[in-house]
Amino acid sequence: MARVLSGIQPTGDLHLGNYVGAIRRWAEQQAPNHFFCIVDLHAMTVPYEADELRQGTRELATWLLAAGLDPRTATVFVQSHVREHTELAWILQCVASYGELHRMTQFKEKGEGKQGVSAGLLTYPVLQAADILLYQADEVPIGADQRQHLELSRTIAERFNHRFGETFTVPTPTFPTAGARVMDLQHADRKMSKSLPESGTLLLSDTEKATEKKIKRAVTDSGTEIRAGDDKPGITNLLDLLSAVTGEDIPTLEQRYAGAGYGTFKGEVAEAVNAFLRPVRDRRAELADEPGTVEQALHEGADRARAVAAETMAAVRDAVGLLR
Ligand code: ATP
Ligand code: LTN
Image (cartoon, rainbow, N blue to C red):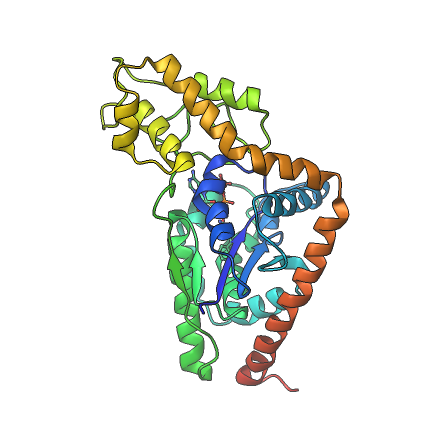
């Protein structure tokens, strides 16, 4: 059975894109050799507040469990709780080259033209490679935006194996078939994003009322027809969204809403999204009242992750010539 690892940063509130594009798939396919890492160390590469990081890490863990990740099945853990991540990252920094890190699009996007860019932002993808290689992951489920980072992880693994002998599994990225790119409700040409949490972003933490309001205010197109097409980006988005949450295909939905007005359609999309998120939101509210459950899950998760990570690190230390 394939070993799976993925990671998510504890930065900001989760939105429907994160859920549909990543977390839902993690939960649906979870198995005992699947690892999900809350990458708090990655969140330190850009300016942040210490209290918010701590709070965000707890919050994200709560949402992951609420979304159905079961700590009795999969391993959910916090990156900084397993020290091997930073240890391996250093060793891999001596394998990766400055040039290839400097060429990463994320570094250019988040760093270019800014003052006081951290060295951590440059070495970010090496820490990500360490996250993956420590667990000898065969598969890494990610969104399309992470393709380049995964390519670098593969390069680092291959270079290390070539130089020091077979040590790491070379990981393969996997991408979702549906919901890989949920678009912003106000800007139909831009992906829904945590960094632009405006009225076009549907947050998991929004109330049902707020969700409804955002959907009712979503941009629509001229005309009255409910159909998908390049000339109708707003309605296409809403149809995609409805399809992602109901599992019905677009032609079926187009047929159902033929002749219906935008208002009725939006009302039904809002209802479907709220119905879809209700169990997750309810479970999240329950978990908020039992912080011990989340803490316990993270504690056990770290223990399980550590056991695997320690084994890999022992082999790495020998391979690179560190004295036992
Ligand atoms: P930021 O806006 O800060 O870049 P983000 O919203 O893109 O954050 P990440 O933490 O980078 O979120 O990503 C977590 C996971 O969610 C990744 O696997 C990513 O591919 C996926 N994801 C993010 N946005 C979307 C979206 N709009 N549609 C589908 N999947 C998404
Ligand atoms: N860079 C990723 C988060 C991330 C990750 C990982 C994803 C850190 N380590 C390991 C997959 C595997 C992001 O920003 N979404």
